[in-house]
Image (cartoon, rainbow, N blue to C red; front, side, top):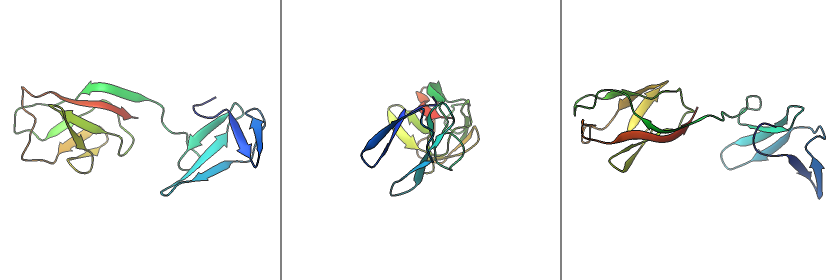
Amino acid sequence: MRGGVGYRKTADTVLPADTPPSDLVFITNTAAHTYLWDGDGYYLTLDGSSPLPTNFSGMEAVGGTKNGTNLNFTIAHNAVVGSVVLVMNGVTYLEGVDFTRTGTAITWGRSDVVPDSADSFYAPNYRY
């Protein structure tokens, strides 16, 4: 089974995972989350077809020259949009607010705080 659930609930009945269902759809305030059956179990999707990425990167050093002026950096994997946060010297910086990302390329968007050689600069975890 791919992550998550091994059963489904309809009304007051819980069905085992090996009972092929029609697709289940859960609505939140921002998106429809669909659990699809793949013959082995359920997997969660956001777009109704592709399973969510299950790979995570952790405590990854951000690549690039830290010299107080360089604004271009890299991470190792093409992350799920919005899943990357960066930490510099214990302060958290957010994708789309403090930096932009295209694929693995990061463009630092803050001129007041630019990574220098003495700074601790890493991506604590992200999904790809």
